[in-house]
Length: 95
Image (tube, rainbow, N blue to C red; front, side, top):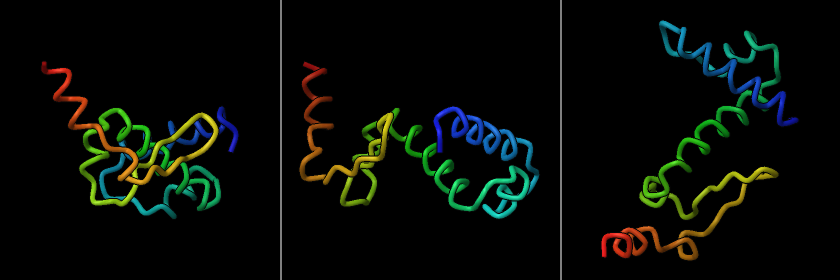
């Protein structure tokens, strides 16, 4: 997925969901956007990760053994044992 097209698909997904008056299946989004299922899933996943990255504390609190981080090129999975420091960083900023 190219960045421009990816951003366009994410925008379409958000617009469709915001207008919806009932829960939507990925298949419904796929048909409305005319893209394949994997493309829609990747775009949804990207939306979620981008929003979660805005609050690293939430990422650290998720019951996952890793922290997902989206970069401009790919997705990186950081083992939680290596990530650490969220709470320590908050404590340092209070002092």
